[in-house]
Amino acid sequence: MKYRKIAALVLAMGMAVSMMMGCGASKPADSEGDTSASGSQSFTTVNEGVLTMATNAQFPPYEYYDGQEIVGIDAEIAKAVADKLGLELKIEDMEFNSIIGSVQSNKVDMGLAGMTVTDERKQSVNFTEPYATGIQSIIVKEGSDIKSVDDLEGKKIGVQLSTTGDIYAVEDYGAENVDEYNKGADAVQALITDKVDCVIIDNQPAKAFVADNKGLVILDTEYTTEDYAACLNKENEALLKAVDGAIKELKEDGTIQSILDKYISAE
Ligand code: ARG
Image (cartoon, rainbow, N blue to C red; front, side):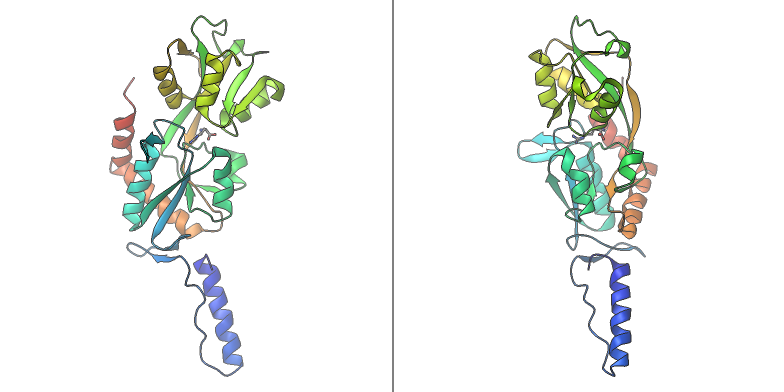
């Protein structure tokens, strides 16, 4: 039993049945992953006492590897959320494309991956309130004839698979003009080796990739602005409420801002 509500229902039904049958109350069946946390909050997680987060650690400065460890803005925010809820944090690295499915199938408790809130994703998962803003920006080689977003027609565009950059580029310029890569860094590599003419990707990773590779520039014109939030299973409303409440508190007390400031220098 993953959910307290369902567990309670099953328990009530079980009790009704056993009362009808004239025996004592049956033992509740929800031993798995049952967690009661701080204050009056009550919720369940996939593994008891643990907040399991799915991410794709190819997205600096939100999530990336420092040696064996996954670090970055999302890792730190998740740790702060877990601390607030009295849970241990476990981060699972996977393809960006797999995060929503893992949340839906209860393999993990939440996705936190610089993930943009979109109406389409809202059909599959619930989002917390946003904790950051992202911008889809365009990376080109220095001296490229692509000077602004208006020059993208007919160009080969590199993106990370299933990201909003991918979705919007396919919508606006046609799938035949979009090359999808599993990692943003691979899309950038394709730009360096002239397999694509530009890369559409979130602005902070764009800055990190441009800083790491000579001869690339980010265009001044932005493609779109979006909100980042954590996503959770639609049925686990109690956990959504708890994580959402923790994020709100961490925004209000300045924790999230100081994490953002630590990784993102003011421009
Ligand atoms: N913001 C974009 C989206 O939601 C890209 C996120 C990619 N995140 C990652 N960890 N690779 O689609």
